[in-house]
Image (cartoon, rainbow over all chains, first blue to last red):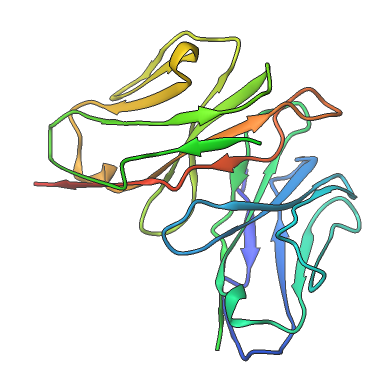
Length: 113
Length: 119
């Protein structure tokens, strides 16, 4: 059984550009979460999906951020008009609906120049 | 609001020493879930343990043990006979009860404790 995968692993972009990240959860996991982690901090919750429904979004998720999970499988996180403050590790996690445990992917490290 | 405090920013020990990582949490939920994750230098968060608020039994898994005390809102993690491979950042996390499912939902993390084990 493969774990959570994320693509790309690293992304360098110029300020003002749009970027999109992909997350593939563990097979049959209904819930999918996005977190952001900056240097020296713990991960911070951004949003989560139950199947294809986006159930909660953090206030951290400005209108430049959008996430989708169109078929209840993989998810994408898009950041429009990137800013230097968006530089961080973006982590994806998945869990079963009836489970308490989230399993994390390797993350996508974003650097905005 | 939920909050997790890991007061120890960095701990350095010599191999084979025992080490305890502290975690104190705040929540108004009557049902909640506590977790520990390990983040090695590679960066991927590795799940270690989950505890439900209604289960205060301590747990031991090999060299790892956890002490959950509701009276002090603490969920401490002890590594016995530490090894170099234990070097990592360790995160304590808290989740309330999800509105629809009754299981855990989003995690609130502490700032982590960096453990350095040297020979």
